[in-house]
Length: 285
Image (cartoon, rainbow, N blue to C red; front, side, top):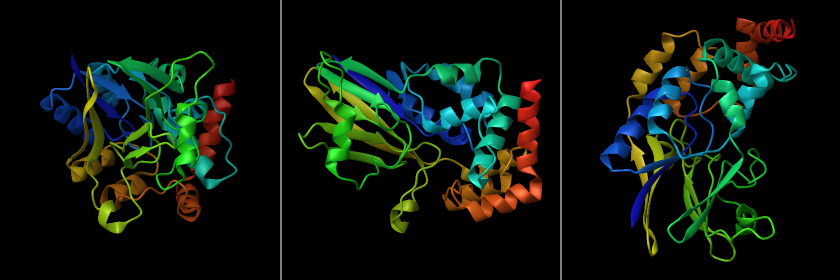
C-alpha cells in the first residue's frame, strides 16, 4: 500500500498559482488532495478556482479564516470601523456578486478540523488550531508547546500521530514536545517569509505526503514556478476591488492586509466603505 496525497492551502483567489500547482501534482502522480483553508480573496478568481477544485475533488476540506471572512462579509456582518474591516467586507461583496450559486454556502459548511487515518497513521488537519482558524499562536518560530494543541482530542478518540495546519504561509516540518510530527504545506497563492533571501521564492508552495504500511515514506515540499505577470494581467481585466494592491503583491510578494494607512487611502479614493454599506443595506431589504 502506498498513497500520494497533495496537501495545499492559502490559494487566496490566485487561479494561476492553483492551476500550476495542480498540473505539477498530476505530474507527480498524486492520488488524493487535502485542502486546508483560505480559498478566495484577495485575488480575482472565484468560479475558475471553484471549477478546478471540483476537478481536484479534495477528500478533505477545512475552513480557513478567509473562508469565514467571505461568509460573514457576504451576509453583511462585517463592520466598517477599521480600514482592514472595509477591505474584508468589500472583497467579500465582490465574491458575492460574482460567485456561482452555492459556493459561499458550501464554504460555510466546511469544518474547522478533520481527522483521517491513512495506513497506520492518524492525521489531524486544521487551518490553524483545531477550534480556532485565526491568530498567530502557531507562527513557525513559536514554542513547541503551542503546537501540542494541534494534537488535542476528545476523550476516547484515538491519538494523533501527525498534525497538519496552514494559515502562516510558511512550509514547515517540526515536532511537538513529545516528538509527534507537525507539518505545514506553505501557501499556494501567497507564500512569504520575513527573511529577504527566502521571501524571494514566490512560487506556489504545497506538500506531497507518501504514506505506506510503515508510515511516511516521503515528505516532499514542492515549490512550483508560475507566471505572476500573467496573474497580474488577468486581474486587470476584472473589477476587483483593491486591484492595485493585488497587482503590487504580484510584484513584491507582500500582503497589505494590515497596512491601515494604505488601505485607508484606497478606501477613501474609491469609496469602498460606502459601497459595502450600500451592499449591506440591500441585504436587509
